[in-house]
Image (cartoon, rainbow, N blue to C red; front, top):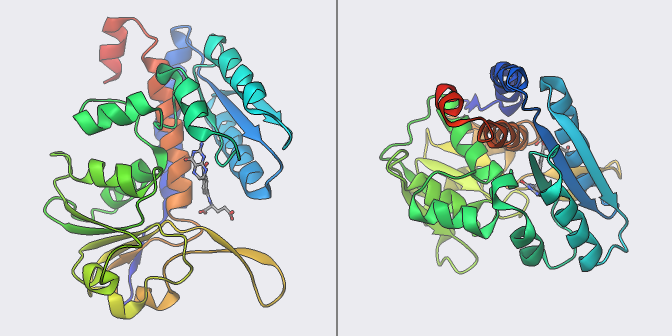
Length: 294
Ligand SMILES: Nc1nc2c(c(=O)[nH]1)N[C@@H](CN(C=O)c1ccc(C(=O)N[C@@H](CCC(=O)O)C(=O)O)cc1)CN2
């Protein structure tokens, strides 16, 4: 068996097409969506992600506000930029690119939750726990959207999440166990006694541990869907740095679906960010118009 490819790049392009029309409607009603980003330091990966986010925005008519700060920026300086974006009416949503090397909990908490397009503000994560509508974290939302777009059955599926981080594993567990998804989730982490056995029982595996090649073919149930969220930077044989995922290449010989890495969940993170930006701007519309967008 060769697995079907969960092509996140293709889905990102489709979602951009879908969102363009909604951005046009917003503009017709005087609301111009504007994404703000706060980037601290000179990490090339973070710079790439932020550049990509603004490029995506430009392609569908969302304006950009960039605040790039040097690696020497202090907590107070970053918080001042957050206060400025909270107050800026042209910035309808913004995010602080992680990692910052600073107190990230304090930074996230300072963002106006109505402008939190990352869905990572404690209030918005709280709404998720309570089962209420709120902006959702982009990577877990991207995982679910990717499965949906390729008709991977989720309701009733047994899911092994590998990794309990705040941006992926933990919120994804909450999202997959909502009635709308109705999956059964096993959240695996470094304390899991027999990871291989947990993964082998799963219909869907989401690998977000940051350990290159952690999930091997012998651990995967034939026909399962395997999403690779791991991002480790390794030095290849040619001496060049490249991204390595958590899923070994031979998993594609056993699985029913696999997400490539790059080209799978990464572009979906960007797609869900765009969707959160548009939804945040739509909430600025007067009630009856907002109802029409739903
Ligand atoms: N404030 C946030 N910081 C971070 C988040 C986040 O959701 N919010 N997630 C990650 C990084 N991230 C978005 O910021 C992100 C990761 C990957 C991709 C992507 O498109 N990757 C490409 C490959 C890129 C490469 O070669 O390096 C792919 O997978 O095809 C986009 C965004 C941490 N920080």
